[in-house]
Structures are given as C-alpha cells and as structure tokens.
Amino acid sequence: ALTRMISAVFRRGGDVSFVVEELKAVFDPRGGAWMGGRYVPSILAAIGGVVERHMIETGFIAGEGMGLKTDPQSHVVNLPTHRGPACPRCGQYEMRMVEGCMTCASCGHSKCG
Image (cartoon, rainbow, N blue to C red; front, side, top):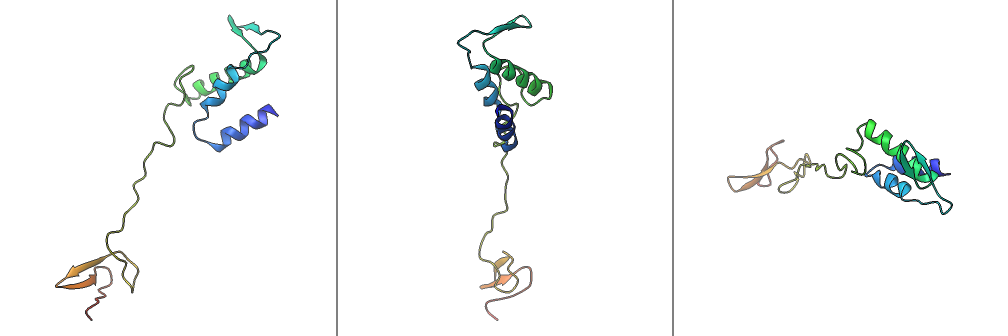
C-alpha cells in the first residue's frame, strides 16, 4: 500500500520532495537500526532515505534535505493577449483604426463599408 501511495503522489507531479521528508520523519517506538553508519529511526525512514538517494542520483533534487532543483510551477508561460475586438468576418484580433474606420488587417473587412 505504501509503494502505491508514493507512486501515485510522484505521478501527480509538482514538488514531491515532501514525501521523502515525511517518510524520514517517521519514528518507530520499538526503536530503529544503524544502517551505513547512520541511525535510521524506522523502516519507513529507511525507505525515505533510499528514495532521497535515488532522487539525488537522478538529479531530481539538489542534495540531501534540499527539495527540488527547480520549482515546476515557477515557469511562466506568456500567452498572446488580444488587443481590441475580433474581426466579425475572419475572427482574427487584427482590427485597427484606419482613417476613422475599424478595419481588419488580416482580411480587410471594414465597418465603414
């Protein structure tokens, strides 16, 4: 069940580094174990450590306890903004004032005839 939950969170995307921190924070009241010269407070903390090492090795996070290298939500996408009304004939947002008449720069439609 734990692996399915972790997999689902990772598939969802975004900053998933919190999963590692949550797992590493779990303490077993019966005690932990020494692994690789470090005290690991529970089996869940050990799993969190393995996931963290994998994320560091694959370049997903910068280092131990450091979170994502870049925020996936921080990339700004500039969408084109429409200035003025759409042309009633072709639908393009190319209506310009030409000699006192609104005229479409795409198809030439003019409100003045």
